[in-house]
Length: 297
Image 1 (cartoon, rainbow, N blue to C red):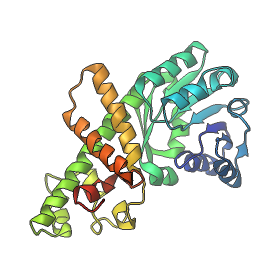
Image 2: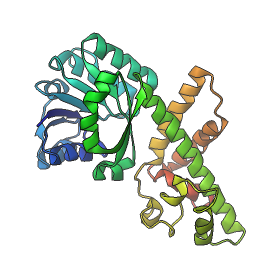
Image 3: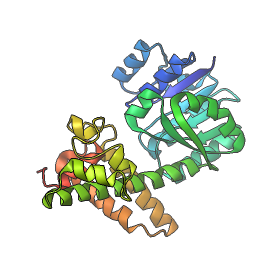
């Protein structure tokens, strides 16, 4: 049995922590929100009163936080994880953040003698609840080997993406591709409807032809063809449009810093920014179909 400090018990972090509890590990959790702390307590977690307390007396610290500034704040400084964790503690950050922040925090952890991996996830809240997340892990081989058994409890697939920050880099690239593909699938359904082609007919053709992709056959953005997709529950988010916008902005910043040419990524950011600015950022990211189809005002 491993004792795990878990910092960040929100929509993703809480079900991840619950899966660690179900596997028989002890979890000492911390979150700024009282409701999240109480939900973790009800699931069987011990609740810490501070970041420092969550980091002490545990074998592993896992964090799931909104942005790079939060990760820096949690790990660095006198009240942070690095200053308070016991020697030998393994550090795992599963937040989706900018590569620079991930590498800066990893450097500080290494200099302090800790093994650390950045291990952002793909799979959304459903994957977190089911324990089927994909983890893209960046860090030294030794740190990855130590982290793999913990990640395996929370995920269905774990991939070592390379050195520190490479997990974040892979996640940013993946989500840029996901946004582009979701917009493409949505545009195809918009055009098909205008041309008199039924949604189910287009789905049946494209899902078995060269147009098939995950955004079509698993997460279809129109109601009907894929019963489990958010389109069939009013576009309630598994992965909110605002979260996709955040990742697209990370991709834009990464492209700018490296000189990569990503015109479709930039256009995708523009479209999701409009969806958000129009007041619909809380929809699932597949709700971009509703905007392209003229259903939103």
